Image (cartoon, rainbow, N blue to C red; front, side, top):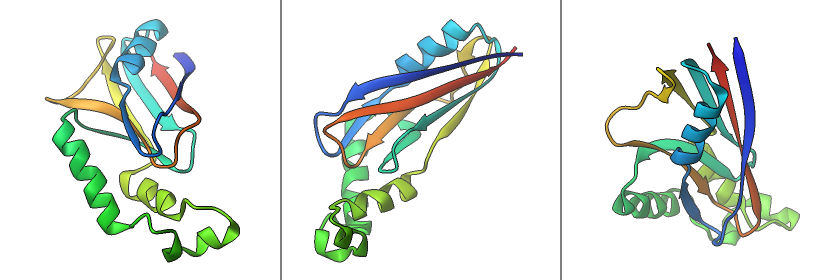
Length: 138
């Protein structure tokens, strides 16, 4: 069995940002030499998410509006913010959007349905961020 663990590093320019990381994950799968297996993609931050969906700007806008309705960014709403933090909402957004994704690798490629792309969603950014990518298989 082959394994490869890599990290994707980047800085987010905005506090809330959605970054398509599909190409970087595909490059790591290719580098691994795995033809049949799986890849785990995990944000290494408690206020970020990795998810799979359509790469369409209107949908990303819809996610942002929906998250704001479910857990507004108003600092006064969260006990967590009484600790000196200002990101209580970001922890809730991460829970809603999910922690990580696992994608099948078939014939050395990500085995996606139509339109599927991997996104890193940042909810408390403007600093250096890391995403773990672990490929396992034969």
